[in-house]
Amino acid sequence: MERILESRKAFDLSRYQKSEGFNRKALERDTAALVIESSGNIHSFFLAHLSNGLVVNPSLDKTRDVKDFYSDETPQTQKEKIAGLIIRQALVDEEPGTVLAWVSPPGGEFNYQEGRFEIGKVREILGVKVLQSYGIPLKDVTPEYCEKLFLMLEEFSDKPSQQIKAPEDLRDKISIFLPPQNSNWVNFLSSTFPELSVLFEKISHGEAHHLKMKALKDAREESKKVLNDAKVSKEDLLHRGARIENGMEERGWNLSRGGCGVLNRDLLSMQNKSLFGMVKIVRQEDEYGSLNFECPYCHRINTREPHKLLSNCKHCGENVKC
Image (cartoon, rainbow, N blue to C red):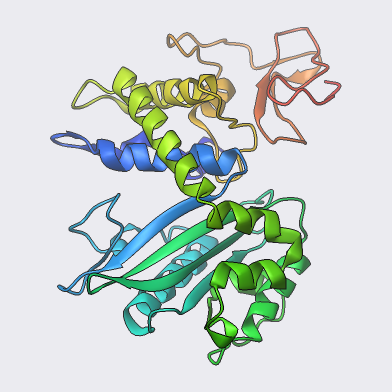
């Protein structure tokens, strides 16, 4: 179980540890993305097709192609990798003005608690083709809604995806289309999906961009506090990751939604380890059962005291009657 949870970490500091130190820029970027998504907000990201043929995310690494960063450890991540590679190739091949969209339904292998709608427009800036995309959380939607959303976009595509027979078929599919009559793509989407119009307004008014700048600033400050060594142990990375997560919450970001994996502090809680030390509680169960349990509402891990029941989730406050 611990190995499975480790592979599902939302925020894994070992990814940023290099022999010469930490890749702080990538760490700050991913910390910002984590808190934006976990708070249920829109996350913006940027790809560029360079003259040397590379497609890069400048905030991650200007010298490595994005195809080097996709994970394919499980059947679902393999599908998501395929979608990412299709988006990469579409940026290379498609003309400016083209809109690229990917829809991820709730559920699946990792039991996602909400859907995800990533959409962006190909542009050309100073001779460089770029894709400015936005990750939009789809709260309280069904997998069937996600399938319907994708198929509506496909009505405007002259390269429709094939063999979509169920929502799970969306994970490796991309919709590629041009807004009708060269209309503003954000206005077009707002009119096509009025239930999402408030979210598209946040994009057109620049709110998503300003939120990302705030998240990056906060992530930079928190990472400075805990990353001062070139090399630390895996166990210590878990503690430092938890300290960054808690620090971001103290700055007003809400991580209770989770959604994209298990937090470091949840792993610590499950292992019964203190954030400030390595003392284990020997007894894992009592007369009421396990001391660790997952909240059915926010899906965060709670740890109760031995021989005592817990009425409300420590994270979201919902009644768990345990």
